[in-house]
Amino acid sequence: MEPEALETCPYNHHHRIPLSRFQYHLASCRRRNPKKAKKMASCKYNACHVVPIKKLEEHEAACVNKSTVEEEDSLSPLKGSCTQERNEQACCNNITRACVF
Image (cartoon, rainbow, N blue to C red; front, side):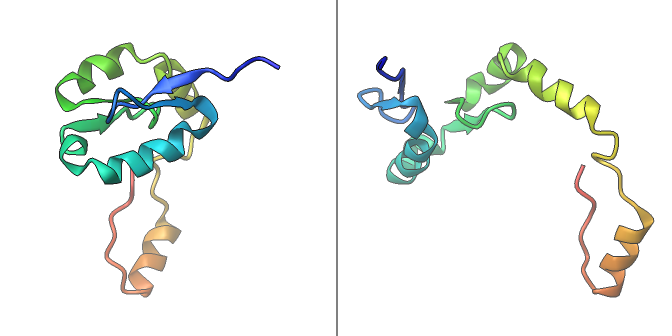
């Protein structure tokens, strides 16, 4: 059995976490490091990509997961559409929510 690949935590570079536990670790480490977390942001293409806010735009432009997400979006024709039924239901329930795009 091959050893699992390790990822480095963006909140504490001394933390090396197996890829299978990385998402859980990010959530707990973010809570333990609120000052550092305020300076970091998650990539919109992969939430496990946490980078400094100043470098987020650069990261997202070159993100390896970008093409996968854009491909999935193009396959879903209803995403981003707001139907009349949904608007009527929201009105009837006295819910004032905008459609999410």
